Length: 312
Image 1 (cartoon, one colour):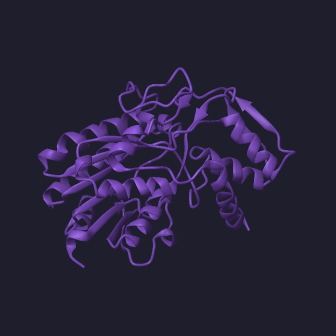
Image 2 (cartoon, helix red, strand yellow):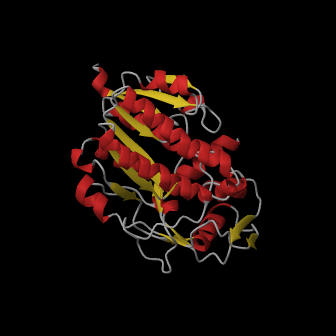
């Protein structure tokens, strides 16, 4: 198959990246992966992908991995909002400088399309649990959000200068199978894992904070649609479900499903985390034809079964 169909997925052994690799292969693309396996797993990489093991901070590796590539889907990142306060240098090194190194190599090697996985963490908090559009004020509450916003702006500013069609997709709270359990990322994975272990779960704050939980398959859908829309160049899109769920409601739903006797503990709210975060997806619908095909209630059993099998 022609090199014009070759896509590089950074972080392709991780949660979102591995699902994206599957989607690209199903669409007929050739897929190349960079991943340092710090969080991702080699068994997540679909058969048929070319694999470069290493960090996006490795200049030589990035140069080799971007040769012959027409498109980059940049998913690799240090994904931890609370953890980015303690490790702000490492966060910026990967999420900002890693992106700049990738952009430089992409420009040198003639990459023509660049999709950047941005985050709802770039936004200012919303006072009400209502969907926010792409023009909502930008005021990150965490070092993670600052680095994501800076990288996003570099990508969009330099895209035309480097002759690349660049697009930023601001992901909201993504869930699904293959998300690695950590104390910092993915409240659904954290709660399910702890409840399967017959452990307590913790809510930070009063639990009335609202999140937009979007299934990973819809994240993949958004990326695939963006690749087919030249008019998406230079644009930013919210990618979520468009619906909000309170953390308390989520916790109670999972507790009743898995371990009704579980204690629900409360700790102080973390200032780095937004209280209300729901995506207005009107622009993605209009330009990309994006339409969420899944919902939280329908997909939770899939996540529970996956994590149950992981712990067996």
